[in-house]
Image (cartoon, rainbow, N blue to C red):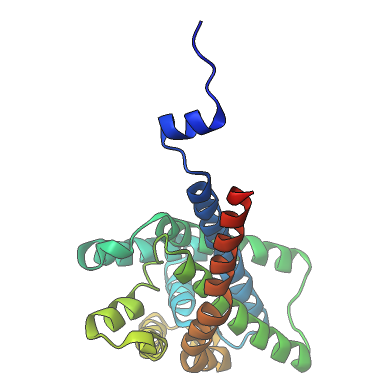
Length: 243
């Protein structure tokens, strides 16, 4: 009969590190939370009718022109960006990349299904203002979750940090993200012009606010909330192992 191993012997034999398992679990939770938050934020902005973030706006525009579902168009867009990411910024690829690329659009469609089933077509101006503020903040927080998790960036979100790293600009990636969003707005305008889509159904006040503030808000949340949360969780895990 084989020898029954103690927990410490199993850890040594199979190279299982409980602290590392906890850290991975916490980072996976951040990725999943980020996915839900981004989906919720985009849905909130869609309810207002004041436009959405540039990436979602481009996906919605292509969806209107092609007749395909928003989630499918977003997945196809992410596949194109994913190819660029693997070719130029392979180090930013990981579990979080795949979750974002294939699940954010589905999450938005899931939330919109409930909005449509509830018959929400038009909301009052104060509600729109609240939804706009909530949507921008939640999207920024969701992206910050992905950045802090360090399990791979979304194809769209890897561009600004990648440029900042290559330019040695440090923490200024938030403003590079704003420039990136502005370029995508130009792409939305081109799609609307070519496809005959009402551009105001795609971009609006929300889009402008995201271009101006989402990057800095994302950086703020990462530095003040998601990064400190991971650090505190790491310390608590180490204390638990010492006991």
